[in-house]
Every structure is written in C-alpha cells, then in structure tokens.
Image: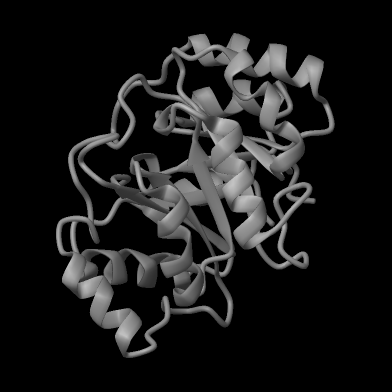
Length: 239
C-alpha cells in the first residue's frame, strides 16, 4: 500500500463512479476511502444515505464496487448504524471499515458486535477484512484505548467538523498523534481531513502510516501531479 489513500465523499452514485474512475486510471492508487455520512452523526448527508433505494437495488442485483480487480475499498462509516452498514458494503466488495468512536455511547459493545459478526482479535476476518477506529480532533485518546486490541489501525480526524472536505487542518492533531505513537508504536496510524502537502510533511515526520487525502487532490489543477507530490514524501528520492 502507498502512503496516500485518496478519499471520495460522494454526492450521488454517478459522482462516486466518476471519482473512482479518475483514481482507478492512476496506477499509483491501490486503495480508496469512501466516506459515507448519514446526516445525523455527521452532516451533510452523502450518498447512499440521500438515496437509500439505489444502494438497495445494487444489493438486489448483486452489484459490486467498480475496479475491484485492482483497488481495495475502505469505508469511513460516519453514521449511527455503522454496525449494520458493514454487511452491505462487504457484499459490494469493501474490505476495510472505520468506526467512529463518538458514534456510539458504548464503544466496547460496538466492537463486541463486530467481533461476533465479522471477525475477532485485531479486527480481521481471515486476513481479508480489517477494522479501524476513528477519533475526532477534540476527543480524548482515552476513548479509544479500551478497543485497541480489536482494531488493525487508528484514524485521527484532522478537521473539527467531520463529513465535509476542504476544511483547514486542526493542529491539535499533531500532539494527539505524537502522544499516541509514543504509547502505541506498533499500531498503524492514518490521518484524515485537512491534509495539505505541508501538513503531510509534518505528519510523516511523526510516523503516520497513511495520509487520507480528498480535496487537496480532487480540487488540484492537476490531480495526478498532486497525488505524486504526496507520494514523494514517503520516498523523497524516488526509491
């Protein structure tokens, strides 16, 4: 896996497919994060919560996410029904799932459900499916400490209001990442939201495993060049 995970926040199924096609044409991309926002836990609402019947038809007709021959899909579940949402996205071919710590009042119960229905231990199902936990920039690390044995990675949200692309980076996250890496150096860490090229340089220096980047690539004049600039942070000499 590369350093950068492009993020897509779809407004419609057509919007999703167009953005996935853009990234699928770039051989440097091998994993994409799809943000799904229910309009309740976070807002504004995104696809498929703004068109649930479309998702139902995809499932009824045994549809799959496009480009599964070369892309892995990671679902960022910014929703209150995240446990049940996993089943639908698994059927469509997604293999990584992120639960937000603040989306439930009982995080241990959520991961107990996930363990019983989808896997165990580090959040994997026969090594094919993995689970992560996300933490908002204003939340305390103590919130996720009890579930670290259940997940394969931790995602720190880099913006104050999740569910919207294009927001400035919340610099409190630097200290949060620094503290977490000191306590748990073995746990992979990714940061999602507000990741500009300058912010990315600092995050890589702190040992962040993956950078989840949306608007800094999609809104760039040359998305291919923007993605390449981020990837160079991992191998600055092209090695």
